[in-house]
Amino acid sequence: MTSQPLPEFSETSTLFIFTPASGTTWNLTLDAFTQALRRREGEQAFVHTKADGGAYGPTDENDWWFDFTTATGTTYEGIGSGAAGDEGLSLRNATAGAAADFAAWLIRDLVPANGRIDFNTRAGMEAGLPDEILTDDTVTGLETVFREHLNGL
Image 1 (cartoon, helix red, strand yellow):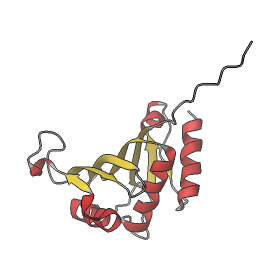
Image 2: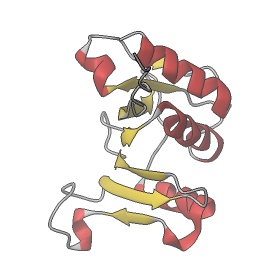
Image 3: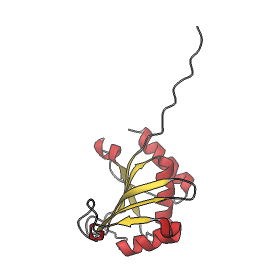
Image 4: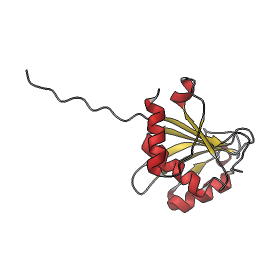
């Protein structure tokens, strides 16, 4: 009997949700998000609002779609909201590593110094897991947290 190579499975991708910790705000706006994104990625970063005349997407400038690919080839796509009570960012179809890089950028360039981030995933929410406060700010540490979260499902 010859041994067959085991099939390779792609890494889990899911929706990651980042919001201000309960009782706090990031004062997130489309303008602040766009400026931080342009500092990170330059003019190739794409931000879309319904006000741009698109056929899809959120209904006003408090909500927006974003889409950009980093110099290393990682693509990020998601939705942002600056609406009171609905403030935060969702990252679609992200792996733990991509989400860690994105979250480290949020902590470094977008969330106020005293701000805190709650996170969850679509899979975590469906499993009834509560939001978790991120206490690490490094890509490596955040990736470990996200992998543990996904492995616990």
